[in-house]
Every structure is written in C-alpha cells, then in structure tokens.
Image 1 (cartoon, rainbow, N blue to C red):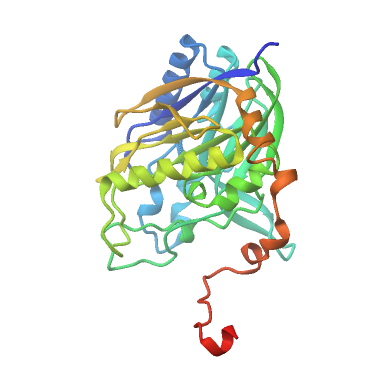
Image 2 (image 1 turned 90 degrees about the horizontal axis):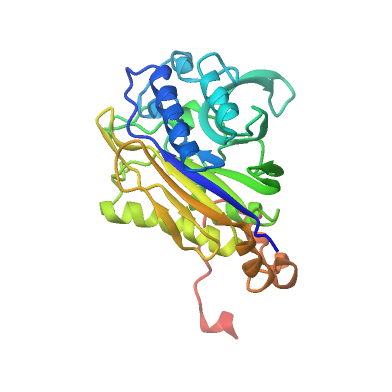
Length: 332
C-alpha cells in the first residue's frame, strides 16, 4: 500500500524593515518558492504577517493611519507573483497577512473590520481555506512603560471563523485534512484540540515572536522563549496526532530581535526539521500522513477516551478562579 505522503517546506523569512515595500517581501518569497520547486516541495508555509514588518509594534493614534499595512483584496496586484509562482511550479502555499474586510459585525451591521489572517492556496490559485487569529496577545492602548509596543489588540479583532479544517487536494494527494493557527494560538491547547476533533493531519502555522518577553513581568531567558514555542507545537502535534509546519520571521526587524527557529514536527511530537539562521531559509520534510493513525487510534482515540462532560469549565469560564480554602469542617 502506497503511503499518503507530501513534501512540505517552512519558508522562514529574515527581517522585513518598516521602510521596505511589499514588492521586496514578495520577491523574496518567490525566490523561496523557486528553491522549494527544485527540492520537490508540494506545499510551502510562509510566516504570519509575511508581507510587511510586524507593524503592531508601531503605534498610530488614529487607527486608520495603519490601514496601509493591510490587504483589502487577495490576490492583489502586489501579491499576484506568489499566485503565479504557485501555478508555475505546481506548489500550494500558506500566507499570513493583515486583512481589512467589509462585512457584518455581531449585530448584522456592515463594518470595516481588521483581522490577522492566513490563507491556504492551491496551485490553481484557489483559496481553499481562510483563518483569522483568535488568541490576540498584547494590548490595545499605548503603553508608555514599554520600550516596544505590542498592539495586536488595537489593530485586530478576534478572529470570527473558528478553527476550520478543510479536506482538499494538495501535492499528489486527493485529500489532506488541513487547518491553520497563527502565532500565539500555538500556546493554547484548546485551539489544537478543536483542530484535532476534525481529524486534522497537517497544521500550518506562521509566527513573529520576539526574542525577549517585552511584558517585563519577570525574567524569561532567551533559550526558554524558543523552548516554550517548540514545546507548544510539539505537544499540540503529539496530543492531536498531526504534523505541523511552523514558520517564523527571524532576525532584527525595526531594531527588535525575532527568534526564528522555524520547525516541522511529526505526530510523535518530534522536530524533523529546524531552521538554524536568522535569514530567509527553506527547511523541508517528507510527511507520511499515515503516521497520524497510531495516535488517533490508540492513546488519543477521542471516540473511546474523551470525557467532555468533565470539561465544562473550559468553555464556561475565562479567568482562573481560586478554589475554596480547605477546612476540616468542610471536608467532613
């Protein structure tokens, strides 16, 4: 029996400076797609907000002044070369970008809405899946106590598409179950589990993560920043029996260091490829999707072992609640 296999690549990008136009980033991504084609890659994953610098570190008092960082159509004239390269080389790709959408809000009123978005595109140029980031870190107002702002909560709404999974053709395979996460989502096991409950086989994930914890709430060593990122992805893959391609931006961007360390992880939670530079770098792996079967039919056979009746607190509660203080009288 022939294995269900696809060759994937994490196309890490070095820094994109504030002054650099989209054309520069797109040309770099097209070169990475050319390299991917020479290596026999069938699906390329680019980072979060891949077309520009990580602009949420820059404050605009008038939020509309930030609109030039966003895309209003996809594809656009500026991103068309990516779609053309995908068609030329027969490669699918994942792209993270900032999206402006005019659509109804929760009340049904059409509004100008801003999201941190990623799309999955097949070699024909069809957008087969769209995802909008749910777990937005950072803050909404300018913080004078911070050397570097992290204003995702200012510039983006919480994603409103849930955590979708699509079964679509990619590479030589007629159907792969694919889902997406963006950056901070990777740290939330609930996000992975929702994908796992849809039998996801391949998770595509882009991120821009600083080497230092800018919250200054306590010391977090540089090596632990990388460790915590990898730990989250490896645990997500193991506990949901799936592969993941996690692609970073890296290097010193607008004076801020991003730690890179893009990885590809298998369903056993093993890192099977990792970037080792702070520049544009392509890492590849052959993913035998049949490896997903072991976990989801044994330890993580959800239909046999999950107990959702015991998990109500997960969706009923947001902040942590202290338990009552134990007393002997109460115990009796």
